[in-house]
Image (cartoon, rainbow, N blue to C red; front, side, top):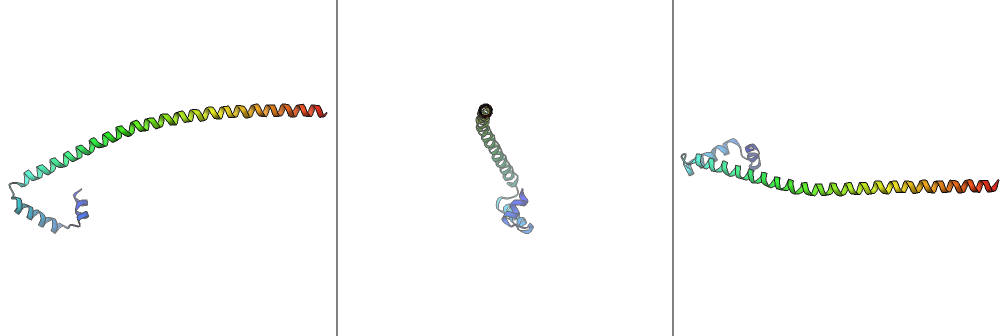
Length: 109
């Protein structure tokens, strides 16, 4: 993680070393553990908040996804019923046409 931050800020090893020295001079070596602890706690809190937000988003989208699946299933059922009905109508029309064709053939003989 820190490597990506250093690359983002375009910092090299010597620049990081100088920054650490300046921080030690500015805050003093006795306050550094407390600062590091505070930064670590802040990062943990941010990660916890991020996880909670992701969880809420997943729950919200889960309900939406279930609704979409429900409607998709209903549409698939309607399509299957319409297809069956259409096939039955085509078969009935074919039978009627065949019967009429046979009837015409018989009449012409």
